[in-house]
Length: 96
Image (cartoon, rainbow, N blue to C red; front, side, top):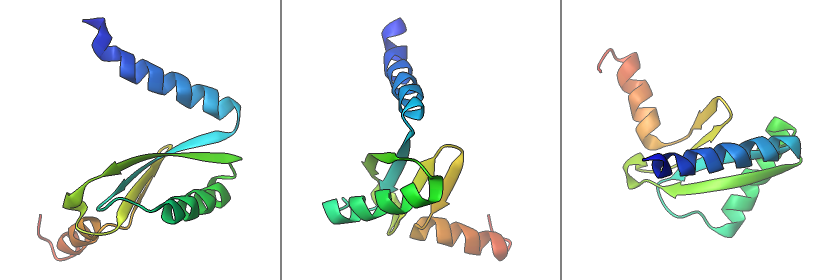
């Protein structure tokens, strides 16, 4: 029953408490595991973009991205993945 909703509720609670502290959560999906240095670089760049005091990264690996990564922060999506670029090219060429 209701236990299925627990993850979503806990995540939303953390998100709201982080907002209070000026901490943003960025969902980062990459084609391979990111190194600690790459994670730090991404977090620093996102701090500058968002103006947040701190960035928490929620990391996920998805080999279907082929290469690169996507970042979802708030309502924004940054897609540097090869899969995303191929989708853009196919849209420009009229393919679906």
